[in-house]
Length: 237
Image (cartoon, rainbow, N blue to C red; front, side):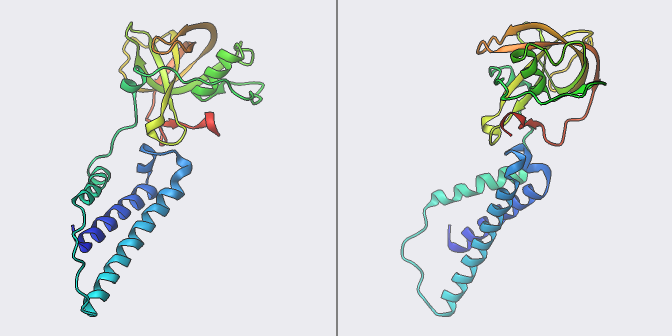
């Protein structure tokens, strides 16, 4: 790989990062708050590529002989993330990963006040934390609405899940809510649902890591489009 090739790869990789950062593609890889860093990284790579081209042209005009040692061939590996960004748009982590990873539910630091009346539209992580660690005190007798994707445990138990994110998709872990009550007769894994129901004290241990999985008693379920940001970041805000 000569300097011109290096510059081309850097430019294309930087352009791919800028494309990902200016669209929702970056949300498949990192949390939404890292968007400025993705854009900055793309800009730095493009500037570096342009500087490399300028340096090589100046050296050619000054008739400076090329360096005697070749660049390492391993530098061609830079093409791999470029091809991944351009050619492959990976789906967000779903039921396959979730059912093979133990629930990562953490005890909330606090329970923000809830509206006194009307249905409670909660994040799945918020519902699970209140159901397990607050023993449903703020949920009892209230209609609850949560959204997540469907997964089926090895014994057929249906879960509603959101993958919780610390930094990037590599560290995403599932938070699971088991469903009971008026469950739709046919559930396809990875289908996104908005579920309306009520709190129930029933819970089970996750078969993967023994973590607590609360239940939600379903009264209605509606298929919905996957959200713009499929990951839940509320547990580390």
